[in-house]
Image (cartoon, rainbow, N blue to C red; front, side, top):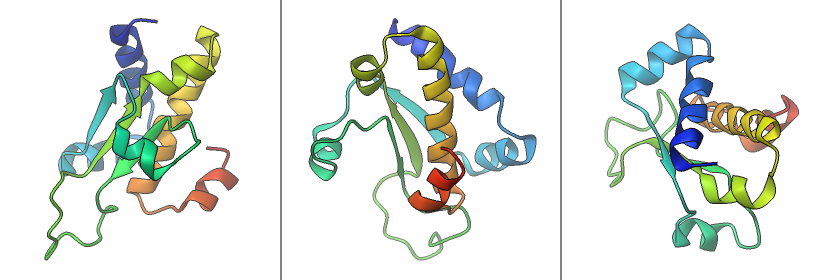
Length: 120
């Protein structure tokens, strides 16, 4: 799958989230970035794991007034991990969508176990 095709699937996944959440991420300017490879810093943070995506920043409504955060709040999706683990296009689309929702859930304040109990 090309990077452009991958990006289109991520965009389609964002189109399918509920409108109230879509309005919030648009209003707050949260970017969902597709990166071809997992950055070294992410690999170091999660050794021996294939990271499909990551949420960077402060959850919605928390910690923004007096923060010294150097990086913008965002979600990153890593094509490399999908390519390494999934060889079926249908499964790839399903997992991309699941990852986008998973990382958005972190933005909205859900922790890892809460998200996983919901199936994401």
